[in-house]
Length: 345
Image (cartoon, rainbow, N blue to C red; front, side):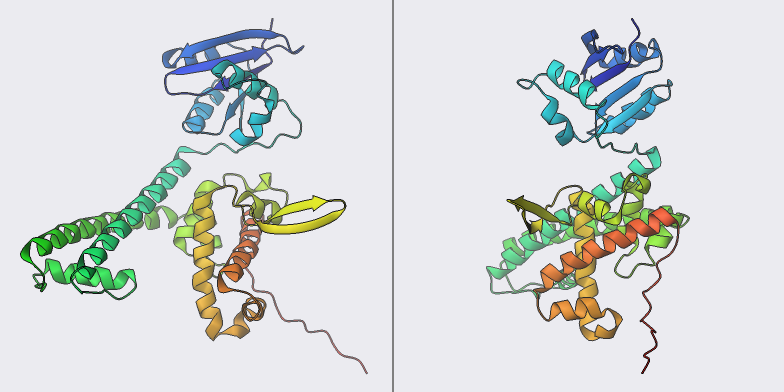
């Protein structure tokens, strides 16, 4: 019997395979060790293979696709409804096999090694920044115990770190000063490592045309642009800008009953990192809009009626749709022109 569709449940060492023929009859249902995965698929004739988009999934998708198979990745949340009973590897593989053949299933585009490398850089930079924030907060807390209060903002903390490492004395007990110095040294090391990653990020983005086009959008810098370029393999998989914004979790969660439709808060589905970058970028953009309302009248008018955080999210939603259009059409951002309709008397 010829295998038509395969569901592969990924793991670290033991992989579960569920294969069916064109009539839907189960042909193979067994577990494979890691070293057995590639030999197993190399013996199969080209067929459809489904996997959940999870850790290591893009690697295995590239390796198996190189053997001539059609590999499709699916969000785990979309596969879960097809699980018939309790959580087992065999049940998960069967659910994947069934879900991959559904005509309405949504799939995840396969990422290249270069895209995954850039995403690894982004994740590592984000981790270092969070660790730096933890250390700075610890320094603030320790100094506050002795009546020393730092001004708000990371720049003030980093200036204090430089002064401490240059030998500036603190009027606190020697033991407490030693602890603060140790923390300051760690902050400096993290700052150096973060700068190295950011330099590599700029080097990668220098010749990337998608990043350059995205940077023409107001409020999107090189960090957000490179993260979008590395995360979105095929923007054509989204049928509209609204679908792309929904993928990022920036659209209101719909609630309808009895013919009445209500929009709630944003869904917060999808990539949290990308959503945070967009919202933070628009928050910074709003500071500029407050002083130049003529540049973005829509946001300036909304600021007069709504909280700044809500406006930042709404602007992030709008910019996400613009970003989709820029990536899809291969064009740069063009600011909307004021209406020039003639008034007749």
